[in-house]
Structures are given as C-alpha cells and as structure tokens.
Image 1 (tube, rainbow, N blue to C red):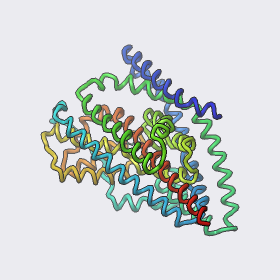
Image 2: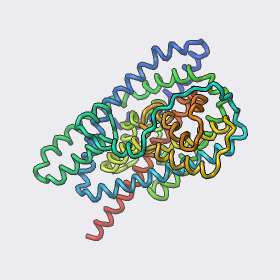
Image 3: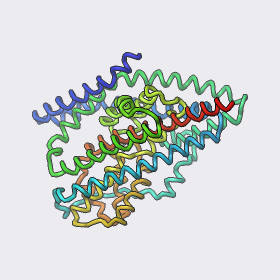
Image 4: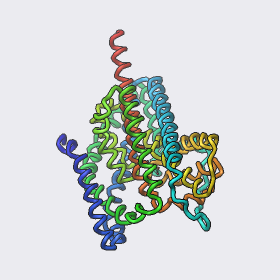
Length: 410
Ligand code: ASP
C-alpha cells in the first residue's frame, strides 16, 4: 500500500502527460468526437465511483472527527478558525486576480459583443443559501449529495453521540466500522486514478486544443499566472507561518490532489484523494475529516480568481472601465459566491453571473469565455483543493500545539 501511495503522484503525472500527447494525436487526426464518445466515458465511470463513495465518507468521517474531539465547544473553535481562514484567503485570491487582470487588460483582444446570448440561472440569494444549509429531510441530502446539508447532519449526529455518552457508544462503534469499510473501498478506487486521469485528459486536449491558441490565450494566461501566484505565494506564506510546515513539503504532499483536481475539475470528486494527501502530510485525522469536506464545499480560491479575471475581461470587451468601488463589490460578491459554488465541474461559471450582475456588467458576456471554461476550470479546481489542504495543515498544527500546551499545564 505504501509503495502505491508513494508512486501515485508520478503515475498521475505520467498519465497527464500521456493524455496530452494522445489528445494532440487525436486532434491532429480530427478525431475529437471519438475521444468524447469512447475515452471520456471511462473517466466518467471513475468520477461516478468517487461521487458514490464521497457522501458516506464525508458523513462518517465528520461524525468520527466530531466525536473524537469529544467537546462541542472545541468543534466550534476549529470550525470558526477554518471558516475565517477560508474567507480571508478567498478575498485575497480575488484581489490577486483583479490586480493581474488590470495589468494585462490593455493587451486583451476585444471580442465582438453584439449578438451574444447567455441565459443566466436564477442567482441564489445569500439568505436562501443560509436556509438551504439546514436539511428538512434526513435522507434527501445524501441522495442529492448536497454536501453542506450532509455536513450539518454529520455534525448533529456527532453532537448527539457526545451528549448521549454511554448510550451513544453503540452507534459510534457502528459508524467507526462503516468508516473503515468505506475507506477500504475508496483506497481501491483511488488506485485506478492514473487511468482515469488519462481518460479525462485526452478529450480535453482533443476538443479544446485549437481554442487555447485563440484570442482568449492571454485571458487564460492571466488566470493561470494569478492561480500560480496565489498558490505559491499565499499558501507558502500561510503554511510556513501559520502551519509551521516547509512549503516544499506541503506542495509535494498536495501534488496528487492538485493533479487529480486539475483533470477531474471537481473538488468534491477529488475529496477522497485530498484526504489521502492530508494523511500523508501528517494532518490530524479529526481535523482533516472536518476541514476538507467543508473546504470542498465552500472554499474556492481558484474560482474567485477566475471570477475576478473574467469580470475585467468581459468589462473590457464591452468597453466598460470598472471603478475601484465596483472592484471592491466584486471582491465581496465573489467571496460570497464561492460559498454557493458547488465543487463540481463548471459551477464557477454559473456563479459568475451573480458577480457580473452585482456590478452591472452584462451577463451575456459569459458567452465570450464559455468555450474555454474547461481550461479555466482545471486550474481553478486545482487551486481550490490546494487551498483546502493548506487550511487542514494550519488548523491541525494549531490543534497539536494547543493539545501539547494543555498536556504540559496538567
Ligand atoms: N470546478 C470547481 C470545483 O469543483 C468549481 C468551479 O467551477 O469553479 O472546485
């Protein structure tokens, strides 16, 4: 098992590179449709398997995490710290996105905007998002994979077990046992990750190849520079100063999750891999089982960067100059939009409509970048999961220090 874990990043990396090469070959042969019809489905099977295991894993691992903290107040403290960290890094991410977009905007190709059409989905109001966190049915959230609601259910069960004391032990043991079984299944699924990565990469390259070289190349480049700066600068600083971990060690440990997120474009689908990475990075289990599912649901730094860059690009195409006040509004709405963005492929583009509307930009501008959204999505999902892992490392370090302080005081 150890050997597989160690070689997984390399295997994923090789699969990614092979996927690009094979994708280019199919592209040159004009067989893009073949790849979406016959290669992509194998990636989809794998994603389905991950989605199938993710709800039981999140449910049982959060319950375990809460019960092992054995104190409701402690859960609250960890939760609050995690959420504050998520908010701050997300706001910081959009600022970075806006700065780079403003630097590059003079060179953007101004695309034709007449005749654009994009039907924006009805944006969810903040209060509705709040209400929707609380489930009205025990099973429905699990069936729909509504992760925030699943997290709330897990918290309640965890609290219930703590308060019930002796009488709750039976349920606790049963959940522990379920968790172990689900983990075994998940480990089995993760072993075939390299094949899945290959199958997901080939169609992306074969279908999007020519567009990368099109007029949107510079906007994509802006987003990727901002992704890289945020990941390398913000997370390095955060994990080294707040988490007392060498950034090189952190990025090495986070690599499999990054690569997997990059190809799957789903934070939720990547969650099992992210959890494995956290374990390898030495993150406390009870912290990982709490911060990571929460992060995969509400923490989207890469998405926030993309929304900042896309807003400036769309404004440029429509000949609109955004004021500093409007940019501040973008920082606020994109931070809030990140909570509502599901950790699934393409969700960030749907939420972009809300950000554009908040500053009066035309929503149909989304049609300008829709064609290459997959490429934006790959980078932003990668950043999203690395952000989740950085929080896990920091909160885990804080917990370890607090515990050793407590032990010393005794
Ligand atoms: N695909 C992203 C994620 O799963 C969400 C987005 O579309 O921005 O994290």
